[in-house]
Length: 76
Image (cartoon, rainbow, N blue to C red; front, side, top):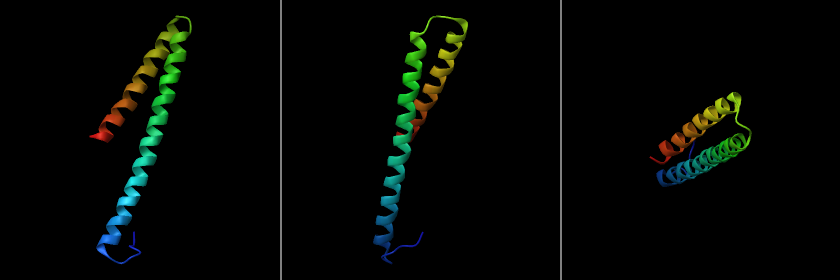
């Protein structure tokens, strides 16, 4: 990356802006995935209880847990 202003402070401003943009995009996508996983899990729970639906619920809960762990790590 090349600083447009040619100064250290200008380069820092550009890096800060790019990091802020990355953070907004990354966390936004992660939040969308978490919302989607929660909807899918709720839909699965509303179906009748079968061996397949129980298996699917466990898979969805695992997936949601992984996404929430990623969000937690991001904020640390």
